[in-house]
Image (cartoon, rainbow, N blue to C red; front, side):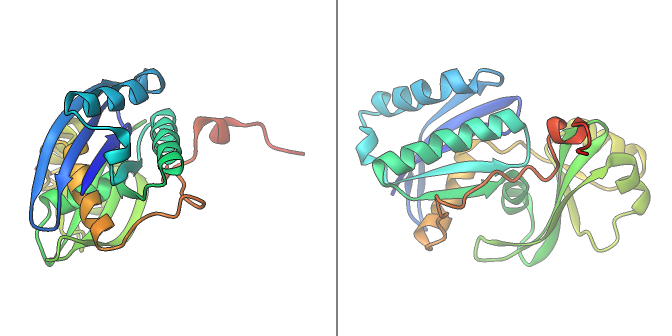
Length: 227
């Protein structure tokens, strides 16, 4: 299976062209994207990555995209672009939560792992997952929390805490919370997870797909109340 995976959830994004099956995975190309210009970069970089590997867009079997949480604008651009490609090329799509990706890549099989991502404003995105040995993860809950409140609550029943964000790790470490600082997940890691989903039949319905923001946008938070 040949796939294109896209991550535009953070300040730094990436595109991966990958090939493989349930047993093997090959990264053909990983391309970095600069945040703030995703709408201008995404389509040209996808085309360029395919061209450099002597591939045509019609040869792509499926697409994978990070559905959240993260940058509101980045997530919208990534999802809209990939969804459009899937509709035009009649290809399936798999979505991956970045919280899920951290748990799957760095978590321990048959244990609970809690992924933590910096949400800004002194807040963190929290994803509690039961990591399964088959390379899947069962979501317990995803939510947003104040970092200091999360630290004050302790880590009872949260399992192994994981974060790719050094500021989050430092803040929790200062509160004597045991957390592992892990490498960030890029589009190739997302592609590996998405490929497994696609092969096992876990594709996303293009008609109902939406971004997983977890929290409301600034426009919603600060909008004047309706009378």
